Amino acid sequence: MTMSKSILPDLEKEPTAVKTLFPDPDYFSSWNDAQKQKKESIDEQFDGKNPDIVCITHTDADGYGCEVMLREAYPNKEIVVITASAGRGPLKVPFVSEHVAKHISQDTPVYITDLSPNEGKGVDFIHEFRNQKELVVIDHHEWSEDNRQQIEWVAEVYHDTDRCATKITHDVLIENPRPEITALAELTQDHDLWIKEDRERSDALADLSKFVSRDVYVNLAREFGDDVIQSEEGLEYIKQSENERNTKTKLAIDRATFHDVNGYKLGIAYGGCDSSDVGEKLYTEYDVDLACIMYPAGQLSFRSPDGTDNALRMAKSLDGGGHPAAAGAKPDKVGDEIQYEVHWTTKGEALRNFVVDKFEEVTS
Image 1 (cartoon, rainbow, N blue to C red):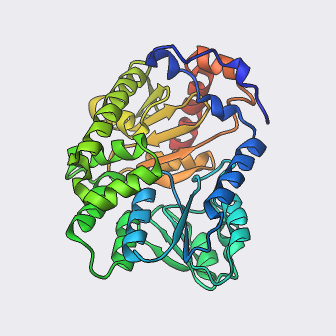
Image 2 (image 1 turned 135 degrees about the vertical axis):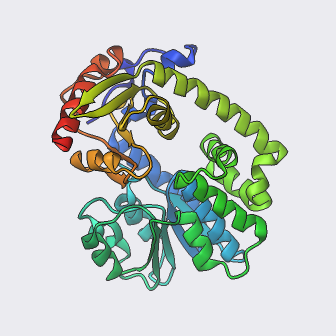
């Protein structure tokens, strides 16, 4: 459905507290508009190129880290990297793959990294590359056995929930990695798998990946390895990103409500923010058994304490997915049953009630 950006207030001069109540205006572009822009972007990336390798990856530190490792493994190869979104949405893997396939031959090796198929969608996930001479899938998210079997018929699969995708790519592809590149893979894993043994440094790395473009991140990470967070340029970006993240986290926590559901404590926050940061504060400082972060566009992100699976159980109940303690979903509520304006002005009141009722079903 195409929505008009005109329903949004003019946020350009508003403070962060106001901006976080509303989604990015680009959210209201139609699926067709978003896909048209992505097609044009892919055309530009392939313009005049006959790449040796193509990679489709996710838009976070782990996805970008996979590109770093791929370029380290094949420094003399021309590599074209295309990003795709996880789960639902107009820019998910099947759509991106369909357009990428138009630009390459069946002899071009294709890597799909840090992206997983939706439940029961393994065939769709690799359909466009089913006849590719070399197709490699590297991922660490939870997969169903059905999805695994569907993908393994076509692709070489490296799937391990105990390593992040960057670390898997590093271990599988690079024979003699530079020490700083190995350290980068381990630092990425510390953040992406919530290991937190090197928390301050891995959080800084994640802040950097969210603040700069993919190209900037990959170039800096290749140049400095894990020391990128101490480089002059990296430090400047990280400080700005950290300040922004902390402000948004506090705002989301201040809007949180808490609910006793079948003996579980559920915390629900609202606003544009870092879901991992907000979720962790809710379960460590407020002792919730499940943290839910509601976004202005209607997405839900779930976090639960280490060693629990409440987050994944909730996400699956809404046709989402992820990890046992960190998952997400996008139910058909905001924009369909709940008006956007009502969602924003009430800080998600109706969606909160829906989440409480759904968690009651999941835990009963």
